Amino acid sequence: MKFTHLNEDGAAYMVDVTAKNPTVRQASAVCRVDCSPEVMQALRDGTVPKGDVLAVARVAGISAAKRVPELLPLAHTIGVHGCAVDLSLEDDHVAIRATVRTADRTGVEMEALTSVTVAALAIVDMVKGVDRSARIREAKIVAKSGGRSGDWVRPEDPRD
Image (tube, rainbow, N blue to C red; front, side, top):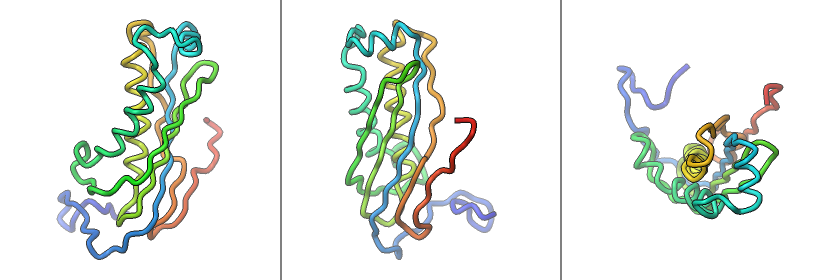
């Protein structure tokens, strides 16, 4: 197996994508934040003391998708042309899904993952005064399209 961010000597380097043609690419990632029943009820009622948790998390996720090259040293600066962050209140957790789109030379998987994890961090930050046990779980890419490797969808996992 060859890792693309390692040269022949095993040193890390940034892959040169200059010769690649821009194409439409998309990636989706999911994550969840497990919360206590009290916090889940407060989220449903809109009574979390720090304010509108889901709105803050959505904006945090969108903002994070645009800042990936500042966080990951080998990531390329690309145009994030679309980012949708969807949050839903489930029985015992907040489900987060981000879909990021670009028309550029490299994919947006890291942007989608960064989006959901920062959105999750925003939720934990806003509920930690009420629920110190809140936890982030299962951040993963679930689909991608475009580019040289084409389309991919995560197979069903019996652990999910």
